[in-house]
Amino acid sequence: MPEAEDALKFAYWVPNVSGGLVTSTIEQRTDWSYDYNKELALIAERAGFEYALSQVRYTASYGAEFQHESTSFSLALLLATTKLKLIAAVHPGFWQPGVLAKWLATADHLSGGRVAVNVVSGWFKDEFRQLGEPWLEHDERYRRSAEFIQVLKEIWTADESVGAQFAGDFYRIRDFVLKPKPLAWEGRPHPEIFQGGNSSAARENGGRYSDWYFSNGKDFDGVREQLGDLRRIAADSGRADGGPKFGLNGFIIVRDTEAEAREQLREIIANAHVEAVHGFRDAVQQAGASTSDKKGMWADSSFEDLVQYNDGFRTQLIGTPEQVAERIVAYRELGVDLILGGFLHYHEEVERFGRDVLPIVRELEREKLGAAV
Image (cartoon, rainbow, N blue to C red; front, top):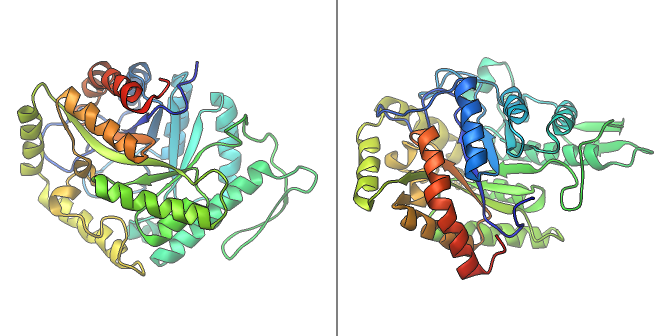
């Protein structure tokens, strides 16, 4: 039986790249291998996680020396599970949208409708340079992503009598008929499309085109500001569904006492891989500074924020099971639809989250929000 629609959803970062989820020399009991990740997916599925997000890296960078390719790894995990949905991250510029639409349709049939896609506009210039692909300016990358998302939807939903049609600046599709199309049912006309960012260009894409919008770690004020922007853009564009659902990144540290959890955070930052964090900061803040409004992802991130490379500490999901659950539900009250979690020691901490935190979250949802969970 599917989870109630109004219940908060949970996802985890798939550690399909080496180095773990923090750029620190502290011990991380995690691994990028398939066997480890297969077991993790089964643990997460039993624990109550609905989604997993595979990472996309094409070359060694900032602690991630080894990387499994996102789409193939996602399909392998889909075939190893029965309920978990896999979100495969892809870069426009490396993928042609018609080819990806075909791949996703096949993966959707193989998995019983459990594949999704995260469209990543790109932040790592060296990947494009080394592979001989043009590196577009920030807002152009998002303009390309906007067309990419529109082409995916057009191919998946076009009437077969006329085929998919699209004429843009980056992509042109003529009379294309996809068979078989992805699985579809009420409320899910095609595989879910995720997209993240922070800049005005990213928010425009999210508000106009995406099913889900991923945010880097934010405090309550940061979430309110982004949600308000997304809803305004969605309304201005005439979306009937109110705009994209909102996913929030957070690095989760659950310990028996708050003091233990805070000490764990202190140790992670104290043992940061300084050279790797500075290298990552230089790359991503160059990308953020290149936006027209200087509001790109990581534009205002501190060194400490970047030790978890998607600002996961900012969400402050750190403390006892009760404290973490209460803060999660406070985000839910603001309008957050999904928590995307990262963990230090994946197997044991994902299992503990499902055992000790998730039941409290569900009880608080019933008490505070009247959610049918």
